[in-house]
Length: 78
Image (cartoon, rainbow, N blue to C red; front, side, top):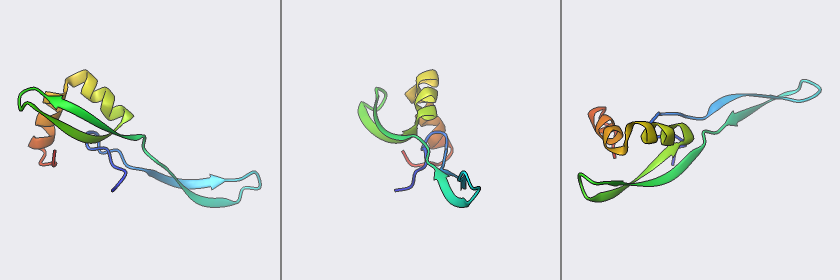
């Protein structure tokens, strides 16, 4: 499974790890992806989403119903 947030679309970042001697090796910054289960009262069912910490804040701010409606409007699977 990919490390992509279903709400915000956040993905890992890539760059260099620079040592004390300035040797550069490739590294990645993973998004803080967590699996969360939310209850949709309108459909009387639970959905499981892979969301980042920022995505959890968006759901808390806007509400799960509004976020799911936006995801469906954009054509993303829920």
